[in-house]
Amino acid sequence: MKEITIQIDKKEHIINIAIELFSRKGFEGTSIRELAAKAGVNIAMVNYYFGSKDKLFEAIVETKASYMKGKLEELIANKNLSELEKMDVIIESYVERLLSQPNYHRFIHQELLLRQREALHHYITNIFTQNMHMVKSIIEAGIKKKIFKKVDPELTMASIIGTINQVMLSKSMCLMLIQKGQDFDPYTDKAFRKRLETHLKQMIHSYLLNN
Image 1 (cartoon, one colour):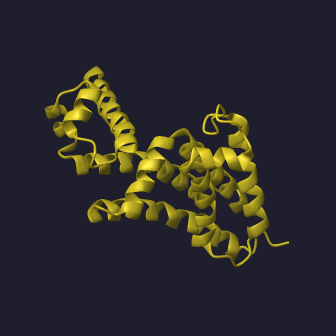
Image 2: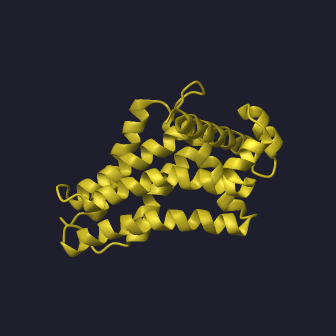
């Protein structure tokens, strides 16, 4: 059991170092040799866990996306929450995950924009699409029950993610929008995170709810 735990910790450590380097230097600009040196492991260990840099990239996306997949599956199965309450949990979860992992968010967004590796691009979009389908099912359930208006489920989710993206992609732009100084870190400030959650909930409630 101890050996398995050490292996999992080492694998997660390599993934975390890869996220740091990919976000700072880009996928192409980061070599396996540099990654291994930064992580304090040998190249053979990186290859043992992942096989290649592309497979490492896939492992990063799958590892990070699996949290939201599990969260959404739990929400769909939950009979005690209303569809509106489920949307609130989705907003809270996405704000928490994205703001707590700015490096990961930026390098994924960069990969999607550049589209230099078609196979990886499709892999990322396929995983995110699976999660979006689960959100869509919650919105459609609310529409069917006449709790929600007949809205566009896909663009509803795009509105949520798009707002968070605007905050995440440029710290300088974010600071300008919220009128804060350069010493303020919006990604770690709990009050700002709550402000963002509250704004998104107000926006989505107003948009979704039948009055």
